[in-house]
Length: 312
Image 1 (spheres, rainbow, N blue to C red):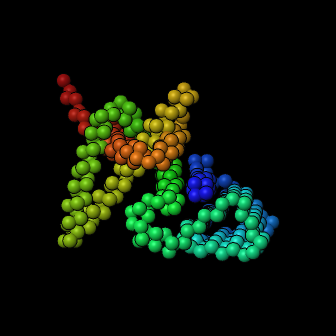
Image 2: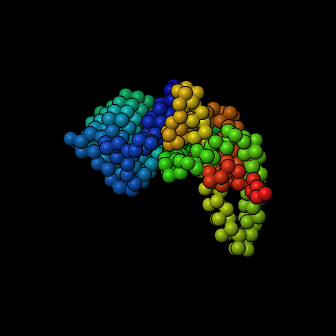
Image 3: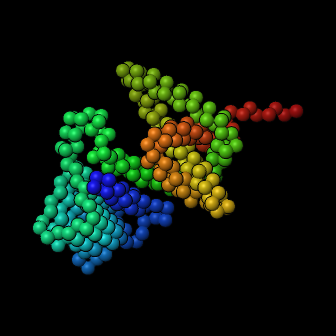
């Protein structure tokens, strides 16, 4: 039964996590931030998502409802799943949920007469905390907390979707050039990334100590910003590398930088769910991403460190 609940949670979140993909938000999807979204009795929506706001469903939502914080109040019909993360979920007597009901933290209120056709997975915040306190590392790694790990992984995928959409759309040539250098100069790129990460870590440690003298604070902030930019660009270049390679292998043709990057993201994200292997792949990709970004100067040159040829 626990396996079934975990799979139900994964399936429902995958639907919501991929909502704002490359094709853009559909006309009948609605995403809000700290506002109230009302689906009136005569209204029909595909997906409804809010961050810190309220969702009131009196009509019909064909697919899923997700709230991070805020509230979900259902008196109408949900065609798939209801997912609340730190949210108050209230099911009225007329509520119909044809998929799964998932709540992590927050509260769950149910009036007699409601209907949930799928599984109900609900963890109180106090239950999660006590589990960690009582069982320590074993409690964190126990299967009952695996949905939380899946939550973080899927939110991470969602964020990378947005970053890929932004970077691959604005810098397609740079992403393509950086990706090509991974194929042409794999080991030099890997070595560049490894050395860069070691030096970056050393600089962060030094600046952290300098924070005691206040002068290290702006240095540390600048390092964090630089590291974030390098990581984002390098990772998107690697997504394109794997996506373009898969496209050629199965279809024998190239796809757009955005399409290839999205395909690579999906492929590597699924690998990331594999224990141990996912961690090792992520570690190697981080090194390669840093190497690709720095060696190509963010996709503007083939080899930043190559000495210019002297004119004869």
